Length: 330
Ligand code: UDP
Ligand code: MG
Image (cartoon, rainbow, N blue to C red; front, side, top):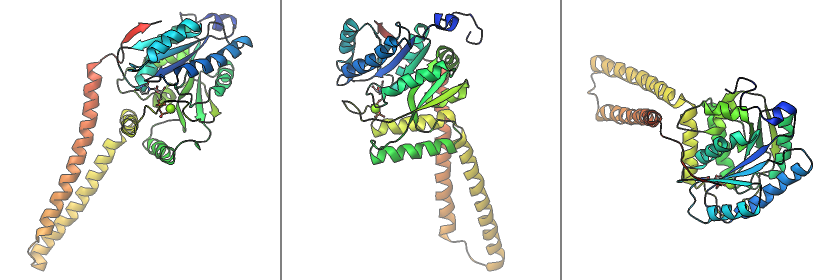
């Protein structure tokens, strides 16, 4: 569908060179402290661009309430009444940032020429949005927001993120350095993304796989406007592990490499033991029995663990469960 021209995806913009309809997709989980300010700030950006005639007046904000347990949905309903730009969907339960984002991209895709995803806390400077749209209009279908500096992040977050990117690159995952989920994607790109049916989703690793003409826009990462991070250390680790195992099979290969090394060492040890038995007349000691036991036991457990990890993923994929269920749309 997305390969053939003049199908349903071609909008007025593509046919007549009208200003594009831009949708900004904002996943929100328990963001009552910041949602009003975010809606205001993003509306100001959109209204500015609409006023200048750079984007269509049908542009909008598409909020995704990821099963929040606070007042987020009520505040979104309120915002909807006061602000014409606001649209929102509510997921039936908390499905996590990536799934919430995906729900927004898929739901709002047929209403816009391009969608921009941004976090609800406005840590990603919304001043980059006009630059993203400019890049889009010069023909780039994916525009990555890339953090310029991280001097406002904590020491721990900064260096754990750096380590994460290095490990991902080493594992062969093609991710954009210092880019999170702040990006613009055209309608065709989202249609292409839909073809990736996998359950274990790591969006920032999938987008570079899609191809298409891409660009980068630099911005300064800001402080969270209000509320707390919804990514505690445990969620961050789970997310990083998700990224590694859903994009790379290198951990499996690593186990094979370690297996070969251990095999080599144990062969050498065996030769030594046989040699000792015949020429040195020493009774093999306790340590030479117990040491390999521990060593091999450990390695085997590690290997089984990694294999189990992938098996678990296959199990999840096979079930083909829906990634999200939408409760309401306004
Ligand atoms: N988020 C979500 N579902 C979740 C956790 C987070 O939709 O289960 C949203 C959250 O509302 C925010 C974005 O994902 O818009 C990024 O979360 P946060 O700012 O807490 O992460 P951090 O910037 O601290 O890594
Ligand atoms: Mg944040």
